[in-house]
Length: 195
Image 1: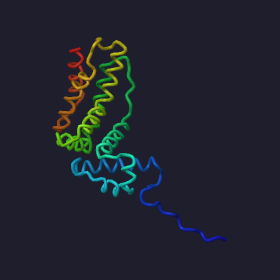
Image 2: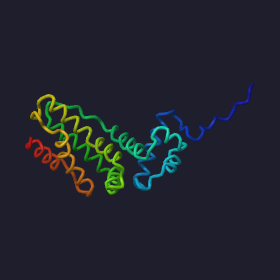
Image 3: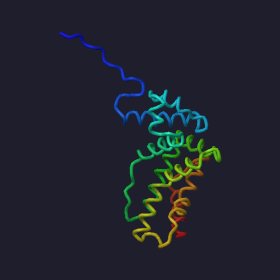
Image 4: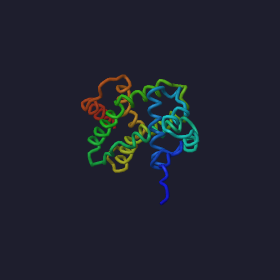
């Protein structure tokens, strides 16, 4: 009878669970690092150590810090439950903005948002554009679909309307102020009234 070999340990750079587990570990470590140290002091070496992977596992997927941060933030918000559009655009917007506000107000998300906003001009234009597009993606898609169905006046500037809806939410979250349903309803009603 052959002697049993001890179980093999996963080599560094290969957390159990395959590629999906590696990506999850890296992006979670990136969010932790962002919360703890901010973007300016984010180091791929520390992210790799926290995720239990080699730096090459990170650089192979995300060649720059901006791409890594964008992926980490995108993954977190893609885990939000989707809100299926209905025939009630106002109700859909209120529900979506409530979800956005709740997610952004979470201590970790708010800290990351504050850190990235505080960078100002130090942030790369590419990172800024990626984060902006991602942050506004869901409300913009909802408004674009409503425009295509005729639920918004022809010629509505969807990008501007998205900004009008999101800006007050982001402002209050950044200041640590409460964003409740009454406030969100007021924002939605005011924005839609202008259309």
